[in-house]
Length: 232
Image (cartoon, rainbow, N blue to C red; front, side, top):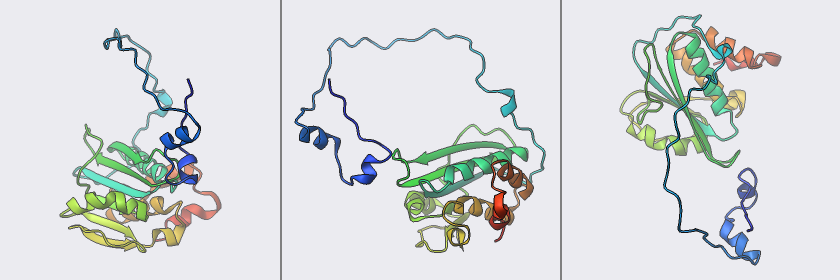
């Protein structure tokens, strides 16, 4: 049996339009479906008690206050490899340090470094039992890839805030639209963090110091990077 697969990190990016079936046929092989016809029915495993995989050291305890009085849903959308997921994680950690209950969900393409990357963050002082929102309160878009992904979400917004990088085309929306020079000011890699810090500075859901603590622990304070991220 010959098993063939395309490298998800580089194969598609280096060979646009390449199809796995075509690669197999060009190799002189035939694509076949193998089935025994006697597949066993699904079964249920017996429940078992296992030690928690979560370490006590991963617990985060509130050290800052927050001013959030209602549920807030936030989306950050950009390009794969642009630091969207790490920025969203840092923001979520800062919110937890400020006593908020937080859920975080990422969305991105299977191919590394290609296409969009987005994350949704939900925050509230009380427990949250969901991970996403069809209509976010705030959408931050840092690239054209992110704009394509965020378009249907922005279109459903009848209020709230849509923050676009200054070089992006407009998106149909009923939300307030503000343009911020994120990529031009800090570069594409840090545009997402800069956009989230800009929002935090505007809305004051929790202290900026909470975000600073998280970014400092992640090494963003090197060579004055932290100070640059705070220049709005």
